[in-house]
Length: 202
Image (cartoon, rainbow, N blue to C red; front, top):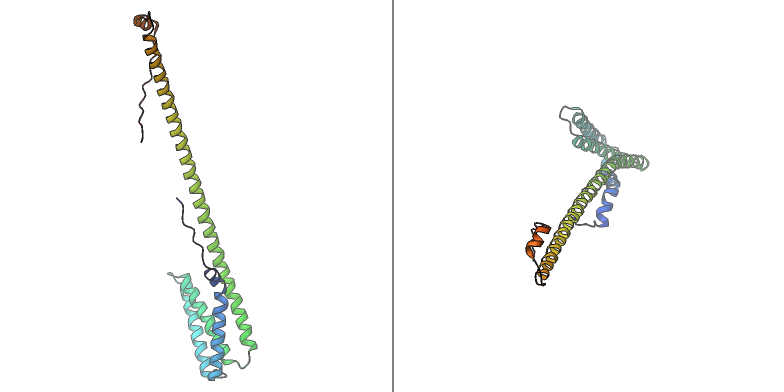
């Protein structure tokens, strides 16, 4: 069975590759906007971001170590904690050097985590295509064998029908000759005609 080939748009192909950089850049930009609107050297705002980042990190720890731990929830919680920490530093610091350093570090970590998922997805996709190709080869082999078998049966039936027709014509022609003795032919031994069941398909 042929599956439709769907060509994905280049935006859909590029979106997962740029998503980590876009996410960390968005957090950095929002942090600097927050810095320009009064968060610079604000102890209360910094304490709030520390509490929020610590809470998200704790949620990630609980989600990853609990008896009903979920890797997706844990990853989301840790990503949220890192984003809050980056936003807090970007909002509290008065210069760009530390926020940019943390942005570069966060982007590198995000791409490292994403690359692992991309490799897993690639392996799953390759395995799926390989299994699909093997199934197609198996089905094609079975179809070829069945086609050859049906062709051989049809050829045998045609040969048997041609033999029977030729023998019937020969007997008919022999019967019209003078001096033909059917009893002598029976005594000599007439070859038995094969039983053939021929079905004509329109």
